[in-house]
Length: 197
Image (cartoon, rainbow, N blue to C red; front, side, top):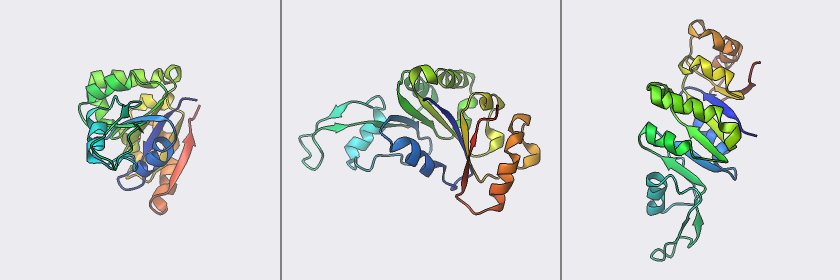
């Protein structure tokens, strides 16, 4: 099954940890836009050269690296995870070619600042079922989520935010009880909310 997921929460509440645990470590290819350089890296790949290849060559999601010069490295390392730090348009062009991949977009708000990136992201979300991709969009606040996304997602992973419930768009009003409950509770808690039909 292919899902579109909104992960929403203030900084430090656990979005990155949730994404790593749920969408990066499972045995599925992964491409993520790591705008804050938060280190979505595979712990098995500790060599600096390998890490730089993950950043510089995100298309190497199924390639093999042979490094005879460094005996500490495995001689046959399969890259199933790739990290991209660069221009949004370049990332979207790569993401649109992916199949059977978890595409994680950190700081998704910036993708809606430009028309071209926004249109490509909409295409990525709509076509995910045909390409067997999961699309995960991270936002810091409910108010930052473009309202049209609510009709295209499968579920929301909501952490504590700093949203003012009086200022939420109409399509996000169904989240108010969850927001209030999380704001009254301890940090790092989350609730998973299925799409409202």
